[in-house]
Image 1 (tube, rainbow, N blue to C red):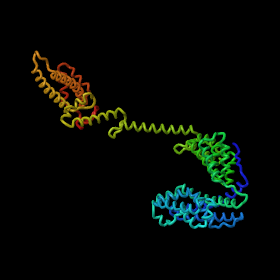
Image 2 (spheres, rainbow, N blue to C red):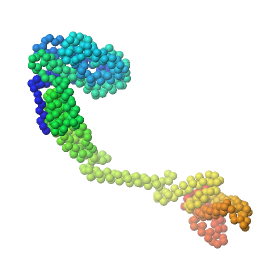
Image 3 (cartoon, one colour):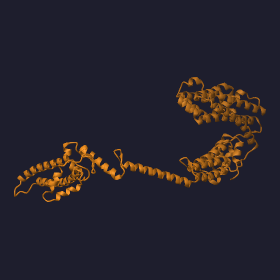
Image 4 (cartoon, helix red, strand yellow):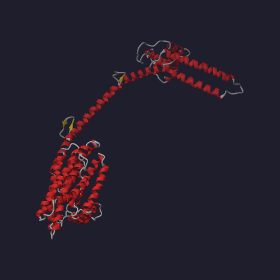
Length: 547
Protein backbone atom coordinates (compact mmCIF):
# COMPACT_ATOMS: atom_id res chain seq x y z
CA UNK A 1 0.00 0.00 0.00
CA UNK A 2 1.25 3.43 -0.89
CA UNK A 3 2.09 5.51 2.18
CA UNK A 4 -0.31 8.36 2.77
CA UNK A 5 1.65 11.60 2.95
CA UNK A 6 -0.33 14.81 3.30
CA UNK A 7 1.18 18.15 2.46
CA UNK A 8 0.99 20.41 5.49
CA UNK A 9 2.35 23.66 6.85
CA UNK A 10 3.05 25.19 10.25
CA UNK A 11 -0.10 27.28 9.87
CA UNK A 12 -2.23 24.22 9.10
CA UNK A 13 -0.63 22.36 12.02
CA UNK A 14 -1.46 25.29 14.30
CA UNK A 15 -5.07 25.12 13.16
CA UNK A 16 -5.21 21.37 13.74
CA UNK A 17 -4.02 21.86 17.32
CA UNK A 18 -6.56 24.62 17.83
CA UNK A 19 -9.35 22.52 16.31
CA UNK A 20 -8.48 19.55 18.55
CA UNK A 21 -8.96 21.68 21.66
CA UNK A 22 -12.43 22.69 20.56
CA UNK A 23 -13.18 19.15 19.42
CA UNK A 24 -12.45 17.94 22.95
CA UNK A 25 -14.78 20.64 24.28
CA UNK A 26 -17.51 19.53 21.90
CA UNK A 27 -16.99 15.88 22.85
CA UNK A 28 -17.36 16.85 26.49
CA UNK A 29 -20.65 18.60 25.75
CA UNK A 30 -21.86 15.66 23.66
CA UNK A 31 -20.95 13.16 26.38
CA UNK A 32 -22.84 15.23 28.95
CA UNK A 33 -25.84 15.39 26.64
CA UNK A 34 -25.77 11.63 25.94
CA UNK A 35 -25.55 10.89 29.67
CA UNK A 36 -28.56 13.07 30.36
CA UNK A 37 -30.40 11.61 27.39
CA UNK A 38 -30.55 8.24 29.10
CA UNK A 39 -32.63 9.75 31.91
CA UNK A 40 -35.23 11.38 29.66
CA UNK A 41 -38.78 10.09 29.94
CA UNK A 42 -40.36 11.90 27.01
CA UNK A 43 -39.61 13.98 23.93
CA UNK A 44 -41.31 16.89 25.66
CA UNK A 45 -38.73 16.70 28.44
CA UNK A 46 -35.97 16.57 25.81
CA UNK A 47 -37.09 19.78 24.15
CA UNK A 48 -37.64 21.41 27.53
CA UNK A 49 -33.98 20.83 28.45
CA UNK A 50 -32.46 21.26 25.00
CA UNK A 51 -32.46 25.07 24.61
CA UNK A 52 -30.72 25.50 27.95
CA UNK A 53 -28.10 22.84 27.12
CA UNK A 54 -27.42 24.45 23.73
CA UNK A 55 -27.10 27.88 25.34
CA UNK A 56 -24.70 26.46 27.94
CA UNK A 57 -22.59 24.89 25.19
CA UNK A 58 -22.51 28.15 23.24
CA UNK A 59 -21.59 30.09 26.36
CA UNK A 60 -18.66 27.78 27.21
CA UNK A 61 -17.48 27.86 23.62
CA UNK A 62 -17.68 31.66 23.55
CA UNK A 63 -15.70 31.81 26.80
CA UNK A 64 -12.95 29.60 25.33
CA UNK A 65 -12.89 31.75 22.19
CA UNK A 66 -12.49 34.86 24.34
CA UNK A 67 -9.58 33.24 26.21
CA UNK A 68 -7.85 32.27 22.96
CA UNK A 69 -8.32 35.74 21.50
CA UNK A 70 -6.86 37.28 24.65
CA UNK A 71 -3.90 34.86 24.43
CA UNK A 72 -3.28 36.29 20.96
CA UNK A 73 -3.49 39.90 22.18
CA UNK A 74 -7.03 40.61 21.00
CA UNK A 75 -8.99 42.36 23.75
CA UNK A 76 -11.52 44.46 21.86
CA UNK A 77 -14.13 41.77 21.22
CA UNK A 78 -16.96 41.52 23.76
CA UNK A 79 -18.63 38.34 24.93
CA UNK A 80 -21.91 39.66 23.53
CA UNK A 81 -20.42 39.89 20.07
CA UNK A 82 -18.78 36.46 20.31
CA UNK A 83 -22.03 34.90 21.54
CA UNK A 84 -24.03 36.45 18.69
CA UNK A 85 -21.51 35.33 16.09
CA UNK A 86 -21.49 31.79 17.48
CA UNK A 87 -25.29 31.74 17.31
CA UNK A 88 -25.07 32.60 13.64
CA UNK A 89 -22.46 29.93 13.03
CA UNK A 90 -24.46 27.39 15.03
CA UNK A 91 -27.42 28.09 12.79
CA UNK A 92 -25.33 27.17 9.75
CA UNK A 93 -24.55 23.78 11.33
CA UNK A 94 -28.06 23.04 12.59
CA UNK A 95 -29.31 20.94 9.65
CA UNK A 96 -29.49 17.54 11.41
CA UNK A 97 -30.64 19.29 14.59
CA UNK A 98 -33.49 20.98 12.74
CA UNK A 99 -34.60 17.72 11.18
CA UNK A 100 -35.16 16.25 14.62
CA UNK A 101 -37.00 19.33 15.78
CA UNK A 102 -39.11 19.36 12.61
CA UNK A 103 -40.33 15.86 13.47
CA UNK A 104 -41.24 17.01 16.95
CA UNK A 105 -43.06 20.07 15.64
CA UNK A 106 -44.85 17.88 13.15
CA UNK A 107 -46.08 15.62 15.96
CA UNK A 108 -47.43 18.48 18.06
CA UNK A 109 -49.01 20.13 15.03
CA UNK A 110 -46.75 23.16 14.89
CA UNK A 111 -45.22 22.66 11.45
CA UNK A 112 -46.82 25.81 10.04
CA UNK A 113 -45.70 27.85 13.02
CA UNK A 114 -42.16 26.49 12.68
CA UNK A 115 -41.95 27.56 9.05
CA UNK A 116 -43.18 31.04 9.92
CA UNK A 117 -40.59 31.31 12.70
CA UNK A 118 -37.82 30.11 10.40
CA UNK A 119 -38.78 32.61 7.74
CA UNK A 120 -38.69 35.33 10.37
CA UNK A 121 -35.30 34.10 11.51
CA UNK A 122 -33.93 34.19 7.94
CA UNK A 123 -35.30 37.68 7.38
CA UNK A 124 -33.88 38.99 10.65
CA UNK A 125 -30.55 37.28 10.08
CA UNK A 126 -30.16 38.99 6.73
CA UNK A 127 -30.84 42.36 8.33
CA UNK A 128 -28.52 41.75 11.26
CA UNK A 129 -25.40 40.42 9.51
CA UNK A 130 -25.76 41.92 6.07
CA UNK A 131 -26.18 38.57 4.33
CA UNK A 132 -22.84 37.03 5.38
CA UNK A 133 -21.54 34.68 8.04
CA UNK A 134 -18.07 36.17 8.31
CA UNK A 135 -16.89 38.48 11.04
CA UNK A 136 -16.49 41.41 8.69
CA UNK A 137 -20.04 41.12 7.45
CA UNK A 138 -21.36 40.82 10.97
CA UNK A 139 -19.40 43.64 12.62
CA UNK A 140 -22.12 46.23 12.16
CA UNK A 141 -24.92 43.91 13.17
CA UNK A 142 -23.53 42.12 16.15
CA UNK A 143 -24.25 45.08 18.41
CA UNK A 144 -27.82 43.80 18.15
CA UNK A 145 -26.86 40.50 19.79
CA UNK A 146 -30.12 40.20 21.65
CA UNK A 147 -32.11 40.55 18.42
CA UNK A 148 -29.90 38.01 16.65
CA UNK A 149 -30.29 35.60 19.51
CA UNK A 150 -34.06 35.93 19.47
CA UNK A 151 -34.30 35.51 15.70
CA UNK A 152 -31.72 32.83 15.00
CA UNK A 153 -32.33 31.00 18.26
CA UNK A 154 -35.77 30.05 17.03
CA UNK A 155 -34.19 27.35 14.90
CA UNK A 156 -33.12 25.34 17.93
CA UNK A 157 -35.40 26.58 20.72
CA UNK A 158 -39.10 26.20 21.34
CA UNK A 159 -39.58 29.98 21.39
CA UNK A 160 -42.94 30.74 22.99
CA UNK A 161 -44.04 27.11 23.17
CA UNK A 162 -43.20 25.74 26.61
CA UNK A 163 -42.73 22.06 27.30
CA UNK A 164 -45.79 22.01 29.54
CA UNK A 165 -47.93 23.21 26.66
CA UNK A 166 -46.26 20.87 24.17
CA UNK A 167 -46.81 17.83 26.39
CA UNK A 168 -50.55 18.22 25.87
CA UNK A 169 -50.26 18.18 22.09
CA UNK A 170 -49.63 15.44 19.58
CA UNK A 171 -49.42 11.66 19.69
CA UNK A 172 -47.45 10.47 22.74
CA UNK A 173 -46.60 7.18 21.04
CA UNK A 174 -45.01 9.04 18.11
CA UNK A 175 -43.11 11.24 20.54
CA UNK A 176 -41.76 8.17 22.28
CA UNK A 177 -40.64 6.64 18.97
CA UNK A 178 -38.85 9.89 18.14
CA UNK A 179 -37.08 9.84 21.50
CA UNK A 180 -36.09 6.18 21.09
CA UNK A 181 -34.78 6.53 17.53
CA UNK A 182 -30.94 6.22 17.46
CA UNK A 183 -30.75 8.98 14.83
CA UNK A 184 -32.36 11.45 17.25
CA UNK A 185 -29.66 11.05 19.86
CA UNK A 186 -26.88 10.95 17.25
CA UNK A 187 -28.01 14.07 15.36
CA UNK A 188 -28.53 16.12 18.50
CA UNK A 189 -25.29 14.94 20.09
CA UNK A 190 -23.26 15.74 16.95
CA UNK A 191 -24.66 19.27 17.01
CA UNK A 192 -22.75 20.03 20.23
CA UNK A 193 -19.50 19.00 18.52
CA UNK A 194 -20.31 21.12 15.47
CA UNK A 195 -21.02 24.14 17.68
CA UNK A 196 -17.68 23.78 19.46
CA UNK A 197 -15.74 23.42 16.17
CA UNK A 198 -17.27 26.69 15.01
CA UNK A 199 -15.45 28.24 17.95
CA UNK A 200 -12.12 27.09 16.47
CA UNK A 201 -13.02 28.61 13.11
CA UNK A 202 -14.05 31.85 14.78
CA UNK A 203 -10.72 32.07 16.65
CA UNK A 204 -8.72 31.36 13.49
CA UNK A 205 -10.70 33.92 11.50
CA UNK A 206 -10.37 36.69 14.07
CA UNK A 207 -6.69 36.05 14.88
CA UNK A 208 -5.79 35.93 11.17
CA UNK A 209 -7.66 39.18 10.60
CA UNK A 210 -5.54 40.92 13.29
CA UNK A 211 -2.15 39.46 12.31
CA UNK A 212 0.22 40.59 9.58
CA UNK A 213 1.19 36.95 9.05
CA UNK A 214 -1.86 34.70 9.65
CA UNK A 215 -0.86 31.91 12.09
CA UNK A 216 -3.73 29.58 11.15
CA UNK A 217 -4.80 27.91 7.91
CA UNK A 218 -8.34 26.65 8.34
CA UNK A 219 -10.20 24.84 5.59
CA UNK A 220 -11.93 27.30 3.31
CA UNK A 221 -15.38 26.71 1.91
CA UNK A 222 -13.85 26.39 -1.55
CA UNK A 223 -11.36 23.74 -0.47
CA UNK A 224 -14.09 21.88 1.41
CA UNK A 225 -16.26 21.81 -1.71
CA UNK A 226 -13.36 20.65 -3.90
CA UNK A 227 -12.51 17.84 -1.50
CA UNK A 228 -16.14 16.68 -1.40
CA UNK A 229 -16.31 16.77 -5.20
CA UNK A 230 -13.19 14.62 -5.52
CA UNK A 231 -14.61 12.00 -3.17
CA UNK A 232 -17.90 12.06 -5.07
CA UNK A 233 -16.15 11.39 -8.37
CA UNK A 234 -14.04 8.59 -6.90
CA UNK A 235 -17.13 6.89 -5.47
CA UNK A 236 -18.91 7.29 -8.81
CA UNK A 237 -16.06 5.50 -10.61
CA UNK A 238 -15.08 8.50 -12.73
CA UNK A 239 -11.45 8.50 -11.57
CA UNK A 240 -9.08 5.99 -13.28
CA UNK A 241 -7.86 3.28 -10.91
CA UNK A 242 -4.22 4.31 -11.13
CA UNK A 243 -5.08 7.90 -10.20
CA UNK A 244 -7.31 7.22 -7.17
CA UNK A 245 -4.49 7.33 -4.60
CA UNK A 246 -3.01 10.68 -5.64
CA UNK A 247 -6.44 12.23 -6.14
CA UNK A 248 -7.56 11.13 -2.64
CA UNK A 249 -4.34 12.55 -1.18
CA UNK A 250 -5.25 15.81 -2.90
CA UNK A 251 -8.72 15.69 -1.33
CA UNK A 252 -7.28 15.08 2.14
CA UNK A 253 -4.77 17.88 1.67
CA UNK A 254 -7.58 20.27 0.79
CA UNK A 255 -9.74 19.14 3.73
CA UNK A 256 -8.03 16.75 6.14
CA UNK A 257 -11.14 16.78 8.36
CA UNK A 258 -13.42 15.25 5.70
CA UNK A 259 -14.28 11.80 7.09
CA UNK A 260 -15.64 10.69 3.71
CA UNK A 261 -12.20 11.04 2.10
CA UNK A 262 -10.55 8.96 4.83
CA UNK A 263 -13.17 6.19 4.63
CA UNK A 264 -12.94 6.19 0.84
CA UNK A 265 -9.20 5.53 1.17
CA UNK A 266 -9.86 2.71 3.62
CA UNK A 267 -12.39 1.07 1.31
CA UNK A 268 -9.86 0.83 -1.50
CA UNK A 269 -6.44 0.57 0.10
CA UNK A 270 -7.02 -0.62 3.66
CA UNK A 271 -4.76 0.30 6.57
CA UNK A 272 -2.58 -2.71 7.28
CA UNK A 273 -0.12 -0.89 9.53
CA UNK A 274 -2.74 1.32 11.21
CA UNK A 275 -1.06 4.52 10.07
CA UNK A 276 -4.17 5.84 8.33
CA UNK A 277 -6.32 5.53 11.42
CA UNK A 278 -3.55 6.98 13.59
CA UNK A 279 -3.19 9.99 11.30
CA UNK A 280 -6.95 10.56 11.21
CA UNK A 281 -7.37 10.27 14.97
CA UNK A 282 -4.42 12.59 15.49
CA UNK A 283 -6.31 15.40 13.78
CA UNK A 284 -9.66 14.53 15.36
CA UNK A 285 -11.32 12.41 12.65
CA UNK A 286 -12.55 9.58 14.85
CA UNK A 287 -14.94 8.19 12.22
CA UNK A 288 -12.10 6.17 10.67
CA UNK A 289 -11.96 3.62 13.48
CA UNK A 290 -15.76 3.38 13.48
CA UNK A 291 -15.73 2.78 9.73
CA UNK A 292 -13.13 0.04 10.07
CA UNK A 293 -15.28 -1.78 12.60
CA UNK A 294 -18.30 -1.41 10.32
CA UNK A 295 -16.43 -2.83 7.33
CA UNK A 296 -15.39 -5.90 9.31
CA UNK A 297 -18.91 -6.28 10.70
CA UNK A 298 -20.46 -6.03 7.23
CA UNK A 299 -18.01 -8.55 5.81
CA UNK A 300 -18.76 -10.92 8.69
CA UNK A 301 -22.50 -10.56 8.10
CA UNK A 302 -22.03 -11.48 4.43
CA UNK A 303 -20.45 -14.84 5.29
CA UNK A 304 -22.11 -18.06 6.42
CA UNK A 305 -21.50 -19.40 9.94
CA UNK A 306 -23.93 -22.31 10.16
CA UNK A 307 -21.44 -25.12 10.84
CA UNK A 308 -17.90 -25.54 12.23
CA UNK A 309 -16.36 -25.99 8.76
CA UNK A 310 -17.82 -22.68 7.54
CA UNK A 311 -16.65 -20.98 10.73
CA UNK A 312 -13.11 -22.24 10.19
CA UNK A 313 -12.94 -21.29 6.51
CA UNK A 314 -14.60 -17.89 6.87
CA UNK A 315 -12.61 -17.03 9.98
CA UNK A 316 -9.42 -17.22 7.92
CA UNK A 317 -10.92 -15.02 5.21
CA UNK A 318 -12.25 -12.51 7.72
CA UNK A 319 -8.95 -12.39 9.57
CA UNK A 320 -7.12 -11.66 6.34
CA UNK A 321 -9.56 -8.82 5.63
CA UNK A 322 -9.19 -7.44 9.16
CA UNK A 323 -5.41 -7.49 8.83
CA UNK A 324 -5.71 -5.60 5.54
CA UNK A 325 -7.74 -2.97 7.40
CA UNK A 326 -5.41 -2.95 10.39
CA UNK A 327 -8.11 -4.12 12.79
CA UNK A 328 -7.18 -6.34 15.77
CA UNK A 329 -8.71 -9.77 15.34
CA UNK A 330 -7.89 -11.72 18.50
CA UNK A 331 -11.24 -11.09 20.20
CA UNK A 332 -13.17 -11.81 17.00
CA UNK A 333 -11.22 -15.01 16.39
CA UNK A 334 -11.96 -16.22 19.93
CA UNK A 335 -15.67 -15.49 19.43
CA UNK A 336 -15.73 -17.40 16.13
CA UNK A 337 -13.83 -20.34 17.62
CA UNK A 338 -16.30 -20.44 20.50
CA UNK A 339 -19.19 -20.43 18.04
CA UNK A 340 -17.59 -23.23 16.01
CA UNK A 341 -17.09 -25.30 19.17
CA UNK A 342 -20.69 -24.70 20.19
CA UNK A 343 -21.97 -25.70 16.74
CA UNK A 344 -19.80 -28.82 16.80
CA UNK A 345 -21.13 -29.74 20.24
CA UNK A 346 -24.72 -29.18 19.10
CA UNK A 347 -24.09 -31.32 16.04
CA UNK A 348 -22.64 -34.18 18.14
CA UNK A 349 -25.45 -34.04 20.68
CA UNK A 350 -28.59 -36.06 20.14
CA UNK A 351 -31.43 -36.63 22.58
CA UNK A 352 -29.35 -35.11 25.36
CA UNK A 353 -26.36 -37.39 24.75
CA UNK A 354 -23.02 -36.05 23.53
CA UNK A 355 -21.26 -38.42 21.12
CA UNK A 356 -17.49 -38.42 20.51
CA UNK A 357 -17.73 -38.15 16.73
CA UNK A 358 -20.06 -37.05 14.00
CA UNK A 359 -20.24 -40.60 12.63
CA UNK A 360 -21.49 -41.92 15.97
CA UNK A 361 -24.16 -39.28 16.36
CA UNK A 362 -25.25 -39.90 12.77
CA UNK A 363 -25.58 -43.61 13.53
CA UNK A 364 -27.52 -42.86 16.73
CA UNK A 365 -29.84 -40.51 14.88
CA UNK A 366 -30.42 -43.13 12.17
CA UNK A 367 -31.15 -45.81 14.74
CA UNK A 368 -33.61 -43.49 16.44
CA UNK A 369 -35.28 -42.70 13.12
CA UNK A 370 -35.48 -46.42 12.30
CA UNK A 371 -37.04 -47.05 15.69
CA UNK A 372 -39.59 -44.32 15.12
CA UNK A 373 -40.30 -45.68 11.65
CA UNK A 374 -40.82 -49.18 13.08
CA UNK A 375 -43.13 -47.78 15.75
CA UNK A 376 -45.10 -45.85 13.12
CA UNK A 377 -45.33 -48.99 10.97
CA UNK A 378 -46.58 -50.98 13.96
CA UNK A 379 -49.17 -48.32 14.71
CA UNK A 380 -50.28 -48.25 11.09
CA UNK A 381 -50.49 -52.04 11.01
CA UNK A 382 -52.54 -52.06 14.19
CA UNK A 383 -54.77 -49.36 12.73
CA UNK A 384 -55.27 -51.50 9.61
CA UNK A 385 -56.19 -54.49 11.81
CA UNK A 386 -58.62 -52.46 13.90
CA UNK A 387 -62.27 -52.62 12.84
CA UNK A 388 -65.01 -50.99 14.89
CA UNK A 389 -62.73 -50.80 17.93
CA UNK A 390 -61.64 -54.43 17.73
CA UNK A 391 -58.01 -55.32 16.96
CA UNK A 392 -57.81 -58.49 14.84
CA UNK A 393 -54.82 -60.78 14.96
CA UNK A 394 -54.40 -60.95 11.17
CA UNK A 395 -54.95 -58.58 8.33
CA UNK A 396 -57.18 -61.15 6.67
CA UNK A 397 -59.42 -61.24 9.69
CA UNK A 398 -59.60 -57.44 9.71
CA UNK A 399 -60.43 -57.38 6.01
CA UNK A 400 -63.20 -59.92 6.50
CA UNK A 401 -64.60 -58.00 9.45
CA UNK A 402 -64.40 -54.80 7.46
CA UNK A 403 -66.18 -56.50 4.55
CA UNK A 404 -68.88 -57.75 6.93
CA UNK A 405 -69.29 -54.30 8.33
CA UNK A 406 -69.44 -52.86 4.86
CA UNK A 407 -72.08 -55.44 3.93
CA UNK A 408 -74.16 -54.43 6.91
CA UNK A 409 -73.94 -50.76 6.08
CA UNK A 410 -74.61 -51.42 2.41
CA UNK A 411 -77.59 -53.64 3.12
CA UNK A 412 -78.96 -51.15 5.62
CA UNK A 413 -78.69 -48.31 3.11
CA UNK A 414 -80.13 -50.36 0.24
CA UNK A 415 -82.99 -51.78 2.28
CA UNK A 416 -84.17 -48.46 3.62
CA UNK A 417 -87.22 -48.61 1.30
CA UNK A 418 -89.38 -51.06 -0.66
CA UNK A 419 -87.61 -50.09 -3.88
CA UNK A 420 -84.29 -50.59 -2.18
CA UNK A 421 -85.16 -54.19 -1.43
CA UNK A 422 -86.20 -54.74 -5.04
CA UNK A 423 -82.93 -53.54 -6.55
CA UNK A 424 -80.55 -54.74 -3.80
CA UNK A 425 -79.66 -58.00 -5.60
CA UNK A 426 -78.76 -56.08 -8.73
CA UNK A 427 -76.52 -53.76 -6.74
CA UNK A 428 -74.82 -56.83 -5.25
CA UNK A 429 -74.88 -58.85 -8.45
CA UNK A 430 -71.07 -59.29 -8.43
CA UNK A 431 -70.80 -59.86 -4.67
CA UNK A 432 -70.26 -63.54 -3.80
CA UNK A 433 -69.29 -62.86 -0.19
CA UNK A 434 -71.46 -62.20 2.80
CA UNK A 435 -75.04 -63.36 3.47
CA UNK A 436 -78.53 -62.55 2.17
CA UNK A 437 -81.90 -63.03 3.85
CA UNK A 438 -84.97 -64.81 2.54
CA UNK A 439 -86.62 -61.39 2.21
CA UNK A 440 -83.90 -60.24 -0.16
CA UNK A 441 -84.37 -63.38 -2.27
CA UNK A 442 -88.14 -63.21 -2.54
CA UNK A 443 -88.11 -59.44 -3.15
CA UNK A 444 -85.80 -60.26 -6.05
CA UNK A 445 -88.30 -62.86 -7.36
CA UNK A 446 -91.04 -60.26 -7.03
CA UNK A 447 -88.97 -57.74 -8.95
CA UNK A 448 -88.18 -60.22 -11.75
CA UNK A 449 -91.79 -61.33 -12.20
CA UNK A 450 -93.07 -57.76 -12.01
CA UNK A 451 -90.71 -56.59 -14.74
CA UNK A 452 -91.46 -59.71 -16.76
CA UNK A 453 -95.17 -59.16 -16.49
CA UNK A 454 -95.03 -55.50 -17.52
CA UNK A 455 -92.58 -56.19 -20.32
CA UNK A 456 -94.69 -59.02 -21.74
CA UNK A 457 -97.75 -56.76 -21.74
CA UNK A 458 -95.86 -54.07 -23.62
CA UNK A 459 -94.38 -56.60 -25.99
CA UNK A 460 -97.83 -58.04 -26.65
CA UNK A 461 -99.10 -54.60 -27.58
CA UNK A 462 -96.20 -54.09 -29.94
CA UNK A 463 -96.61 -57.53 -31.55
CA UNK A 464 -100.35 -57.02 -31.97
CA UNK A 465 -99.65 -53.99 -34.07
CA UNK A 466 -97.38 -55.98 -36.35
CA UNK A 467 -98.38 -58.19 -39.28
CA UNK A 468 -96.73 -60.65 -41.55
CA UNK A 469 -96.01 -57.89 -44.00
CA UNK A 470 -94.94 -55.35 -41.41
CA UNK A 471 -91.78 -56.12 -39.43
CA UNK A 472 -91.52 -55.32 -35.74
CA UNK A 473 -91.25 -51.59 -35.07
CA UNK A 474 -87.99 -50.03 -33.69
CA UNK A 475 -89.71 -49.58 -30.32
CA UNK A 476 -90.56 -53.26 -30.21
CA UNK A 477 -87.03 -54.25 -31.14
CA UNK A 478 -85.60 -51.97 -28.46
CA UNK A 479 -87.99 -53.41 -25.89
CA UNK A 480 -86.95 -56.93 -26.82
CA UNK A 481 -83.28 -56.01 -26.46
CA UNK A 482 -83.84 -54.42 -23.06
CA UNK A 483 -85.73 -57.50 -21.93
CA UNK A 484 -82.81 -59.68 -23.02
CA UNK A 485 -80.32 -57.52 -21.11
CA UNK A 486 -82.57 -57.56 -18.06
CA UNK A 487 -82.73 -61.36 -18.03
CA UNK A 488 -78.96 -61.63 -18.41
CA UNK A 489 -78.42 -59.27 -15.45
CA UNK A 490 -81.08 -61.11 -13.48
CA UNK A 491 -79.38 -64.46 -14.16
CA UNK A 492 -76.09 -63.17 -12.75
CA UNK A 493 -77.85 -61.54 -9.77
CA UNK A 494 -79.80 -64.75 -9.10
CA UNK A 495 -76.62 -66.82 -9.08
CA UNK A 496 -74.77 -64.60 -6.60
CA UNK A 497 -77.92 -64.20 -4.51
CA UNK A 498 -78.25 -68.00 -4.23
CA UNK A 499 -74.60 -68.16 -3.11
CA UNK A 500 -75.25 -65.61 -0.38
CA UNK A 501 -78.41 -67.44 0.70
CA UNK A 502 -76.42 -70.65 1.11
CA UNK A 503 -73.88 -68.60 3.13
CA UNK A 504 -76.73 -67.38 5.31
CA UNK A 505 -77.48 -71.04 6.10
CA UNK A 506 -73.76 -71.56 6.89
CA UNK A 507 -73.39 -73.66 3.73
CA UNK A 508 -70.85 -73.37 0.97
CA UNK A 509 -71.73 -71.29 -2.04
CA UNK A 510 -70.89 -74.26 -4.24
CA UNK A 511 -74.36 -75.61 -3.47
CA UNK A 512 -75.50 -73.52 -6.44
CA UNK A 513 -74.14 -76.33 -8.62
CA UNK A 514 -77.28 -78.24 -7.68
CA UNK A 515 -78.88 -76.19 -10.45
CA UNK A 516 -77.05 -78.42 -12.94
CA UNK A 517 -79.09 -81.50 -11.98
CA UNK A 518 -81.38 -82.07 -14.93
CA UNK A 519 -85.04 -81.20 -14.52
CA UNK A 520 -85.15 -81.00 -10.72
CA UNK A 521 -81.94 -79.12 -9.85
CA UNK A 522 -83.57 -75.70 -9.87
CA UNK A 523 -86.41 -77.01 -7.68
CA UNK A 524 -83.94 -78.27 -5.08
CA UNK A 525 -82.12 -74.92 -5.00
CA UNK A 526 -85.45 -73.06 -4.86
CA UNK A 527 -86.46 -75.19 -1.87
CA UNK A 528 -83.18 -74.28 -0.08
CA UNK A 529 -84.07 -70.62 -0.59
CA UNK A 530 -86.96 -71.11 1.86
CA UNK A 531 -84.61 -72.27 4.63
CA UNK A 532 -83.95 -69.62 7.28
CA UNK A 533 -80.39 -68.54 7.95
CA UNK A 534 -78.36 -69.33 11.06
CA UNK A 535 -78.91 -67.06 14.03
CA UNK A 536 -76.03 -64.70 14.75
CA UNK A 537 -72.74 -64.41 12.90
CA UNK A 538 -71.29 -67.37 11.04
CA UNK A 539 -68.09 -67.92 9.10
CA UNK A 540 -69.52 -66.07 6.10
CA UNK A 541 -70.36 -62.86 7.91
CA UNK A 542 -72.67 -61.11 10.35
CA UNK A 543 -76.33 -62.08 10.67
CA UNK A 544 -78.21 -60.03 8.02
CA UNK A 545 -81.35 -60.20 10.19
CA UNK A 546 -79.59 -57.98 12.76
CA UNK A 547 -78.62 -55.29 10.31
